[in-house]
Amino acid sequence: MSTSVEAFRAALRRILQDQHQALREVIDGLDSDALNWTPGPMTNSLSVLCAHLLEAERFLLSTACGEEYPRDREAAFQYRAPDAAALRAMIDQGEATVLSLIDRLSEDDLVAERAPAADRLGRRGQGVWWALRAVEHNREHIGQALLTRQLYEQHAAARSE
View (spheres, rainbow, N blue to C red):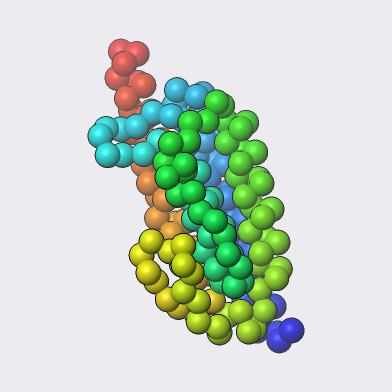
């Protein structure tokens, strides 16, 4: 294994672990009402954002590794967390899964062109693109989760006045 591939894998592991920790911090201390609350029509709850992020992350990294991952994208958008512990366990399991995928990434995987049949957007790119897309996609939804928590806290404060 080349030094550059090892460095890429180490950086990817660290970034994704940091992102998962950010998700854990967003949900810390929240009850099921807060986790499943939406700010309005056509918006997502913290539960949905976490479930979708983790499901997409696995799809994107499986694709980078050249492995098929049977997506159930719509199920993530229906997810309702019973509590923060369940959501935390989902994050922990998702992290373990993607870290094992990263451990399998080879130099050949990073340069191979991938176009998974299960991709609803018909994308094609090298394995490295799919891995970096996971980081980018996560960051987008972590930002949404942070904003959703802020909006929930404002909503809860206004209701208690």
